[in-house]
Length: 194
Length: 194
DNA sequence: TAATTTTCTTAACCTACATCAAGTGCCGCC
DNA sequence: GGCGGCACTTGATGTAGGTTAAGAAAATTA
Image (cartoon, rainbow over all chains, first blue to last red; front, side):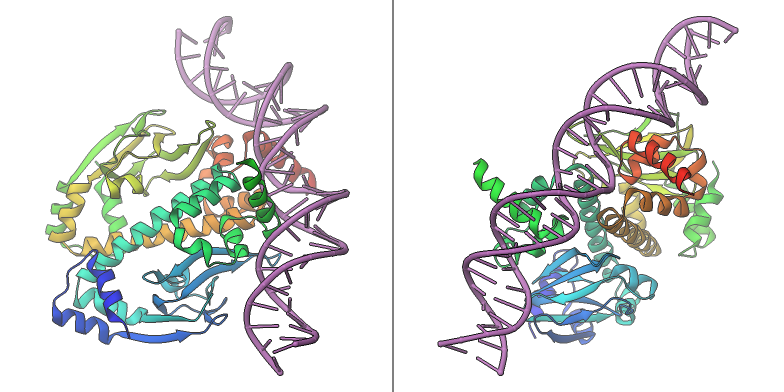
């Protein structure tokens, strides 16, 4: 299992000794999720934070009329979880599905909490990770309140340039908050305009 | 300055010794913000987290067509800041304004970071605070993607029952993401229906 | 209390995006 | 290598909520 990726990811915010690295990696649990399979489904209690080492996941909710809303994409080097469920340990509201064959490293909530007490640097790391997620989430809320679909799409292209090509466009439509039909029309319109 | 409120707020997640309480309170800076005055304005770098001891603040952004979008209300016992700016120390995107005469306790970013190293419990506290904000922000995003204005309004009533009465309704309209005109119509319609 | 500003309401009309429906192209699978 | 399904497109029509405008009511200020 490619531990370098996750250790480098930590290194962005905290520095660990050799020994601490070993404590940490011993807590991880590798797992493979095949395309179209689920790491977590609606109603299940989320027991793990997942770090993607290869492939790509998507987290989404399904509303009462059956429409899917993508909350996040997690390509390699990203963390993902149903935070609501992970924190409260109540049944979750997200499905986390593999868009392609994906490898993840799982860190259980219990182990994560052990890390907080054994190696306080982890509390620091996850505080920063959570802060960054909060800022991203707030920005997305602002965008959804104040931008048109087209502007949101342009933002998406800037922020996730690598995802654009190899993601089915209905997933992008769902992320920016429009139907696949409207998204298709919008793209055609954008080409026409230039 | 009413320190009890903020100490009780901390006590929800961490327990401090008498001495730690004193270290903490020494870092706080009380401030009064009169109705319609600003604690922070667009373009300014956010240097403080603010804890409201009485009154009420609102944080909002203004989009390019001049429309205000309320991101959060902060009545007594709430924390507020422009997280994007506080973290990055870049010019912020929020205005934070007093809806009525308000008392806050300011904790500077520098002092907050001192607390993280001097008393690690604070890192724990703010991690949890941030996690809860993240969940709330995600839920609001989901709501804005999948609920009608009427449903969002009902949610708002449930979540902030105390705010409803003494908040001008255009602020509520802005929070749930509709114009004051539509909000007014919607309310009339809701009365008609029952 | 009067004057002024701000908030709220109501009405006519408008637009971004959704829905429904039908057709085309393509990719994975037996 | 053919076929069943899924992704994408295009068109007609529907709708939630926006815009503009103008007056009524409420709250601040003088």
